[in-house]
Image (cartoon, rainbow, N blue to C red; front, top):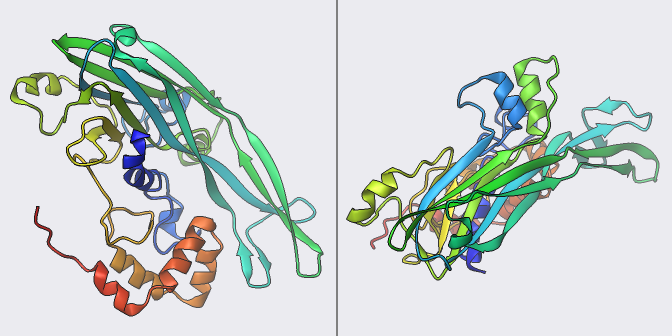
Length: 338
C-alpha cells in the first residue's frame, strides 16, 4: 500500500508527546499530555468559547492534478484514550500497587485507531459533499493482580469511552485537470455539560476525543501539488486553500506525488526520520543522543517508575540500557549535503 512509505513519520506524529522525559507518570509534563492534534467533542468546544485553544474539527485543502476518474484514498489516524485506574480488592481506588519489583500506577493508555474511507473518484465528489460517519464504542475491562503467593492485591480497571465523528470529502474543479480537494474531520461525540472547573471538564472531554489526529491522502492516476513549492501558475490556487489545524505536505519517497500527509505539526515536503535514530522517544523534535544520556542518568527508582508506565516506555528503557557508549558517537550531529 502506498501509505507504507509514510508510515514511519506518521507513527512519530501519532506518538508525539505521548510520554516525555523523565518518563514518569507523576512528572508535570506527563500530567499535561495530548497537546498535538486533539479533536474534542463539538458540544464541549462550542460551550467553552475558548477561541482556537480547543478544536472540534480540522480541515485539509490541497490541489490534485487528474480527471474525473482519478482515485482518492483517505485514512484518518488517531489515538483513542483508555483510562487506567487501580482498585483494592474491596473496590476502593488506590494510587499504586506494588508486587515484588513491579509497581503499577494509574495512567492514560491508548488504542491506535484508523478510519479508512472507501476509494472514491474525483468525479463522484465534484461539487458534492460526501459524509462518512464513524463510531468506536465504549469498553470496560478488569485485570486482577495477585502477589507471588497467589493472593489478590487489587485490580487494573481499563475504561474506554465511546467516540464518534464524521469525515466530509469534497472536490472542486478549478481548471483543466486541476481540482481542490477538501477533507474535514469533526468530533461529533455526545458530551453532556457537567458542573466542573474547566481543567477537570477538559480532562473528561479528552476521554471522548481524537488524540494526535492526522490524515493520509493517496491518489491513483493523479498527483498532488506541493503547497510549499507549487508551479507559478498554481500559486493563486494554493493561496486559496484553507487549512484549519493541519499542514499538508508531500510524503513518501522524494519526487513522488501520490501521497500527502496532513498533520497538526508543521513539516516540510517528504519528511523523514533521521537514519541514525534507533527507535521512538515520543518527542520527534529532540535529539536521540541527548535523550539517551538523560535516561542513563536516571536513578534505579526512577527507572522502576519508567518501566512501570506501559509497554512502550518499558521498551524504550530496555533499548536505551542496551546501547554501548561507543554507539552514541553515531548519533552525534552531522552535515548532510544534497
